[in-house]
Amino acid sequence: MNFIRTEIPDVVIIEPKVHGDERGYFVETFRQDKLEEFLGYKINFCQDNESKSSKGVLRGLHYQLAPAAQTKLVRVIQGSVLDVAVDIRKDSPTFDKHVAVELSGENKRQVLVPRGFAHGFVVLEDNTTFAYKVDNYYSPENDRGIAFDDEALGIDWRISHNELNLSAKDTTQPKLSETNDIFKYEVNYYND
Image 1 (cartoon, rainbow, N blue to C red):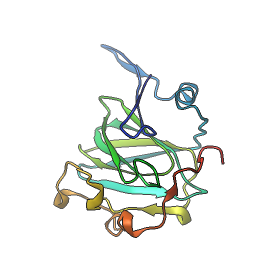
Image 2: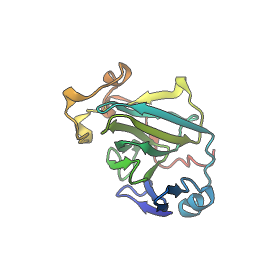
Image 3: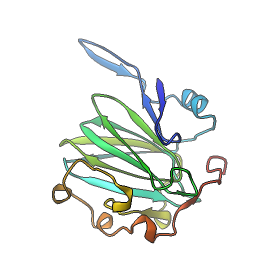
């Protein structure tokens, strides 16, 4: 596996090695020991999630507050998405900045989205299957979101607004500047 730090160093792209021939392919999609060695801290994923969506579906920007904050390891099994992670750690040098990475069943790339980041994705192809691991269970009472179209974030979703398919929840999220539900930069989220 190849681990690549992005322009926000806590967000990491993972490129697994794909072994293929005329029969198909084999890929090791997760190695906890290699990931922890690269990161320098322990991660204990406890839940796997999967969604299937059509082109234009946008899910996000979502996060959970402590004590239910989550690190996510996201990937696409089939199809493609533009995956986005937004730094919402107050006083972080990259606060309100984002990383956008295209993930597809073809490129097999993954993104590690740490605690303290809002996460979302827009589906670029029909019949896209998106899968991810989290290190904390889903907690409805700690579930929060930020407006996907917050102009201050400057996210180019690559699909025009009128072609997006959003849940009711995602059409009513506050702008980042309108919420106090953010993280402190200095808190160690990984040893709680």
